[in-house]
Length: 317
Image 1 (spheres, rainbow, N blue to C red):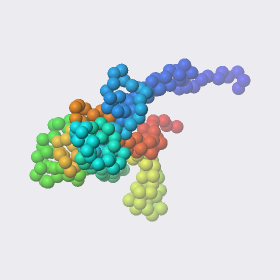
Image 2: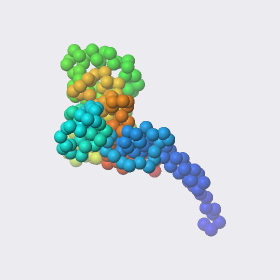
Image 3: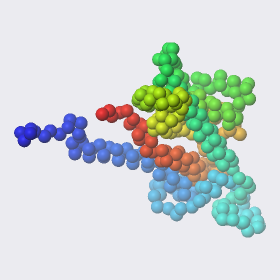
Image 4: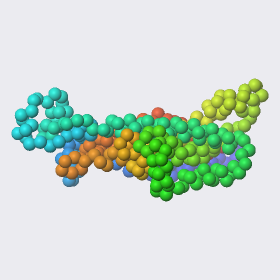
C-alpha cells in the first residue's frame, strides 16, 4: 500500500513530552533521595560538623555517631579521665577524646531485633492470610462479598487513635502488653485488609481456566492453588509484602502506647537518643541509617516484582 500514510500511534508520546516526563521524574527522585543522603552523611559527621552553619558538605568522616548510638556514655572531668587505664579499643579512645567514658551498651540492638521480628513476622502472617482470603473472595461465591470487602477496607480507614484505648485495655487484660506476639498480631490485623484488597485484584487477573485444567488433571483445589495460582501471583504477593512491611516497620503510635521495654521497636527509640548538652544528631542519624537499611535491602531485592506488581493488569493486549 504505497499510497497509505504512516501515522504515529496515538499513544506514542512526542520526544519533547518524553524529555519533560524524564525531567519531572529525575527532579522528583533527587528531591526524594536528598533527605536520605543527608541523613547518611550526618551519621558520619562529628557533633560540631552536624550542627555547623552553614551546613558542611565536605567533612572528615568519623564513627562518633555510631559509637554514641551503641554505647551509654557519661561526661567526666579531664583529670579523672587522665587517671584511667589506657583505652582497651578504638571506640573507648574515641569517647575519651571528647571527655566521655563508656559505662555500658545501649539497647539499640534489642530495639532493632524487635523491629526485625515484629516487622517481618507481621508481614509474613498478613500476606499469608491476605492471600488465602483474597483467593476465597476471587474464586468462590461468598454471600455479601461486596459488603464484606467494604467492611475489610473500612478497618484500614480507621485512625489508630480511635481504637488505641480499647486495644490498650484489651492487651492489658490478655497479657499481650509489651510482647512481641501482641505487636505481631496487631500489625497483622491492620495489614490484612490492605493485603486482601491488593491480592484480590491480582488473583482476579489470573484466568480460571488454568485451575480448571489442573482440576481435570486430578489436582485437588489446594494443589491447584499452590502449583498454579501462587506462581502467577508472586508479583502481587511481593508488592503486597513490601507495602505491609513498610507500615509495620514505620509504625510509631501503636508501639509507643503498647510497649515500654521488651517489645519496643526502633521508631519510638530513635527520638530519645539524646546526648549530654543537647540532641546528639550524629547518633540520631546513625540510628536512622541503621533503621532504613533493611527496608532498602528488602525493596531492592524485590524491585522487579514490585514494578511488575504495580503495573500488573494495567496494559491489556
